[in-house]
Image (cartoon, one colour):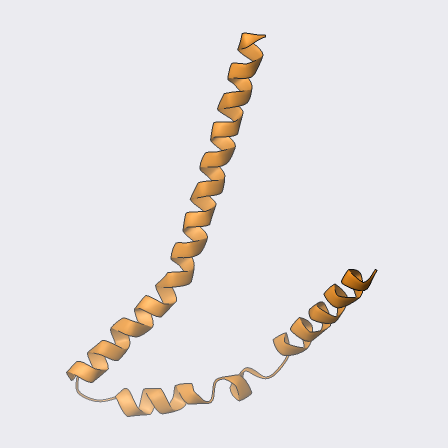
Length: 87
């Protein structure tokens, strides 16, 4: 019962964090944009590449897990078919 209470508290905290105004959580973004506007110097290019890398990392992880789950399910179906043929 205690674990259920902790889960409920966690869900409430997550819901409260989800409804916070986005402006309050992302105040640094406007400063980055104004600091990096202008000519394309090496610092600006490095910042843009690092931003793309940070955005691609979660998609890579989720894609890898998805492919692993898909292949595991296919392998399980194939093994189940082989087990029924042996009987």
